[in-house]
Length: 258
Image 1 (cartoon, rainbow, N blue to C red):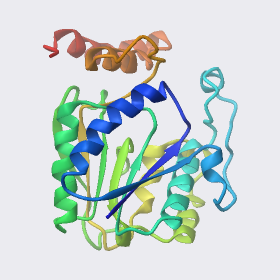
Image 2 (cartoon, rainbow, N blue to C red; image 1 turned 90 degrees about the vertical axis):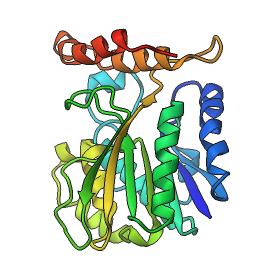
Image 3 (spheres, rainbow, N blue to C red; image 1 turned 180 degrees about the horizontal axis):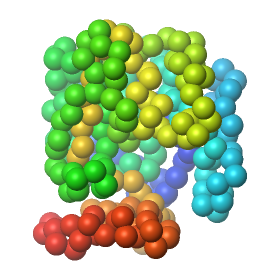
C-alpha cells in the first residue's frame, strides 16, 4: 500500500491537473493499491506541527505570483515530513499539484517504483533539469546516496519523490538538520529535500520529461508541447534568464512532438 501526499501551494488549473495525474494513477493501480492525501497549503496543514520557517520573503519576482518564497525549500520539506507523520503505509509518494506527466515520464516513474517496491533501492527523486547539460533527456539515473554514506548529492530533483517510509528520518531529526543552514540555503527545495533520508538509505535522482504547469489552461486540455513551452518560458523573466534558457528552447523547437 502506498500513501500519495500532495503538498505545496495549489497552483495552475486543477481540473486539467486532475486529468493529467489520473494517467499516472491508472498505471499505478496496476501494481499497487494507494491512498491520496491532500496536505496542501493552507487547509491541508490543519494537523501539522507549527512551521518554524519564513513563509514569505521579499523576493518581488515571487510576490507578483502570490507564491511563498522566503525559506520556501524548508517550508516544502516541513510540509512533507508532516505528511509522513500523519500517514502510515510502508511507501510514500510526494506530489505537487502543478505536475505535468508525459507518457514517457510515467513509464520511467512506474519502472523505478517497481524497483523500490522490490527493494533494489530505497528512494527516488524525479524531475527535469534544463540547465545542466541534460536538456531533453528521457531518463538519466544518477546516484544520490549510497547506503551508510552521509555524503548526499548537493541537489536532488523534487517534482515527485518516492520513498520507503523506513528510509526517512524522523520529523525532529530533519528539522534539526535544516536548522544548521543559513536562510539563503533554505530557499531551495533541491537542496533541502536531500536531508530527508536516513543514513542507511540508498537513493537515486531521475531526470525525465516531467514538466510544471506554469499557466492557467481554461480552453481545453493542452498538449505536452504547449505545457513544456510555457514551463520553459516561465524562467525567462529577464534577459539574463532568457539567454540561459536558449539551449532548452532550441531543443523545444527542434523536437518532433507527437
